[in-house]
Amino acid sequence: MRVLSASLVVAITCTVSAAQTAPPDLRGLWKVSLSVVGHKPAGDAAGADRHFMEEFEIDVRIDWQDGHRFGGAELVQGGGDQHTIIPDELYSGAISPDGSKVHMVDDNGFDTCTLISPERLECVYRHIEPRHSVVGNSVWSKVK
Image 1: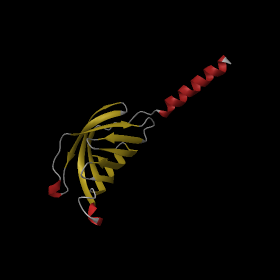
Image 2: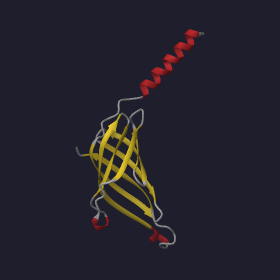
Image 3: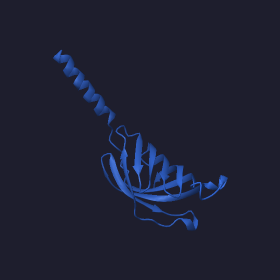
């Protein structure tokens, strides 16, 4: 019975170890293309005017990484006059143990991403604020 128990512990340990892969190095500058849809609270507008759509790009700099954990800052650019540079909206994230998913939070929302390659992420972004909520698709491309 002890041999069976020891074999079972070894098998479980090997399975858990095999599930954890070395994470890719995500540090660097990323160009993020977003396509979002959102809405304003019912009191702000009526009917279809409550909803809005936007497409824009931002830059995110991932400054540090410790294994599966990482962090950095968002730099908002483009999209006309309504977007300004915000060098200090922070990002924190974690790569899944199997290396297939990336989960991130910023100051007011979160991303759930599929790691296509070490240079490309496909994500769904969500955030809720008192005056509006958005959800959107984004593609992250590593610049350097």
